Length: 593
Image (tube, rainbow, N blue to C red; front, side):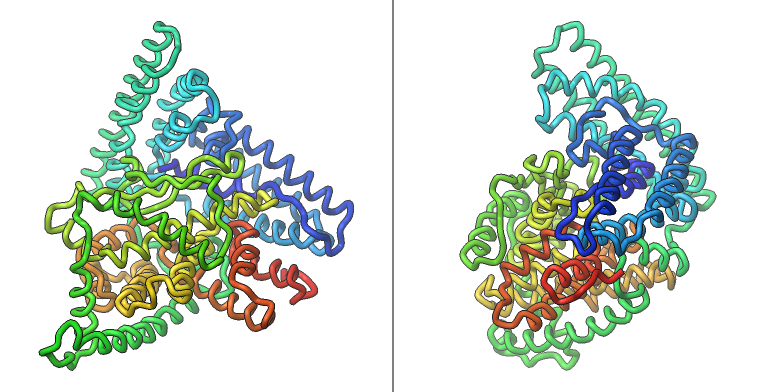
C-alpha cells in the first residue's frame, strides 16, 4: 500500500496535462492552458517522484518522498497556487477536451485540499504507510538495465528510515482496523528485502563489492521495517485496551467525500435510495428465475412460501459446481482467452494484444482488502504488463475455503473475470492509456472504473455470453445485488452505525452471500469509505447513458463504436465523459460546466 501522503498525491499527479481535440473557441487560450498543465506535471514529478513510478515515469526513481510536515506544507502551497492559476483561465474559451480537463482539475484540487485540511487521513490511516509497492515495481519492471535499477533502489532505500519515522509522528489518532491492516501488509512487504532484492542482486552483473553493500543495506532496511511493525503492534495493543478512533466517517464527511471523490450527477443520499429500490427489483428477477429452474433441480418439492428462501436455496445448489481450492488461480488464468474470443467474435470493442495481461498471485503486501484486483501500468510505460492479482486460498481454513469457492463458483468466476479483466478493468484501463489527454488518463475516477466493470458484465450477458443460461443470469443478479448492497452497507455503516451482525445478516440473507465473503466485505467496509458506493453509482450512470445514445443515434448506433468512444476519454468521472461525448457526437452545442 502507498503512504497516505502518496495517496494524497496520487490524485494530485493526475491533474496536470492534456491535449485538445477540436476547439469550440480554440486559439491561444488552449495553448496557454496546455503550457500550464505541462509545467505543472514537470514540477509535480520533481516533488513527488514515488507516484511517477506508478505512472511509468522513472526519471526520479531513486528518490522516496518522506511524508513529513514540511512536505505537507509544500502541498498546501502547491494547491493554493494551482487553484489560483487555474482560475485565471476562462473555461468557455477552451477546446472541448480542455474544458473537461478544466473541470477535472477544478474538482480535484478541491478534493486534495479537503483531504489535507479536513479528512486528514495521514493521522489515522496507518495502512497508507508502506514503501513496498514502488520498490516492487522498480525491481520487476524492465524499464532500464537491472544494474541501474538496483543502484536506484539502493539510493532510494536510504530514505526509508526517515519515511517510517515521519509516519510514526503523523499517526496521532489511528483506527484499530487500519493499524491491523498496516501490520499485515508491512509484514507482507518484508519479502522484498529478504527475498526479491537479494535474488535480483544475485542475477545482476554488479561488482561483488557493490552486491555485498546492497545486501547489507537490504538487511538493514528489513530491520527498519520490522521495527516499524513492532511499533504498530504496540500501538495496536494500546488501542485495544484504551479505545481507538472510530473508522466510521459520519454523515458530513461521508457526503463531502462522495461529492468530491465519486463526482456523480447524484448525491450520496439519492444513490442510496436508488440502491434500496434496485434491491427490490433484483429480488423480483431472482425469484422469477429461481421459480423457472425449480422443478429441474428439485422435482419433488414445492417452491418455498418465503420466496427469497427459494432463491437462496437455488443459488446454493448451483454454486456446488466450483474448482478445487488449489486450482483457483490457474482456473482464472485459463478463462481469459475465452473472453477474448467472445469479444472478437461479436465485434464488441477493440482489444490490443500488445498491452499484455498477466494473471498472478496477489503480492503479499497488497493482500487483506480484496480477493482480486488489477494493477495497470501508467501512460508513460503503457505497454508494460497489466497484472490481474488473484489471492490464492491458502490462508483459509478448509471450511472458509469451501465457503469462498461456493461464492466464486464456476459461473461466478466468469463474471469476476469479465469485471476484473476482459472487457472490464484491464480493457478499460488499456484504452485509457491511449487517451491524448494525460489528465483523462492519469486521473482515475473510481466510479467510472468500477461502474465500467459492472457494465461490462451486464453487456456481455445481454450479447449472449453463456448462451443466455438462466443459472448464469441468476448468479449475475447475485453479483449485481452485491454492488447494490455495497452501496447500502457503505452508507449505513458510516452514517447509521450498522453493526457487524446486522451487516452480515444483510449480506447473507438479503444478498445471498457466503459467510466468508460477507465477513471479508465487512472488513473491507471498515477499511474504506465511499469506495463501495462507486460500483453501483458508476454502473447506473454508464448504462443509462448508453441507452440515451442508442436512442439518439438510432440505426447509426453500434456497441463497438459506443464502447470505443466512451473508453477513449480515459478514466474521468462519467458526468464529464457524458458532457464531452455528447458534444463530440453533435448531440450538444457546448460542454455542460
